[in-house]
Length: 54
Image (tube, rainbow, N blue to C red; front, side, top):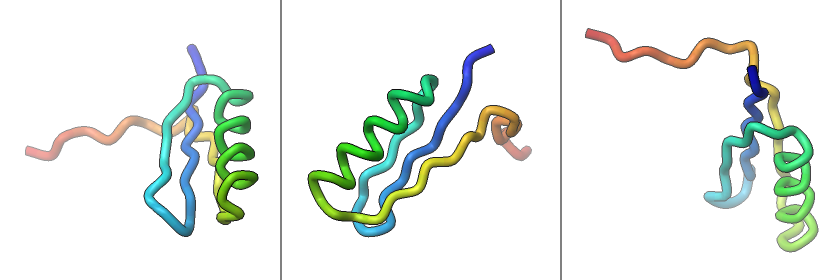
């Protein structure tokens, strides 16, 4: 089972889901370096995917 990592910018629309922690960290760090924006990275590997409500 692979990981799932959610990266989100607090100051613009940048957001992504990644299966590799190093890729997620790289995307976060690159966006921070390029823009100076505040970012979050969260490991969501253990969370259930939301289901559709009927």
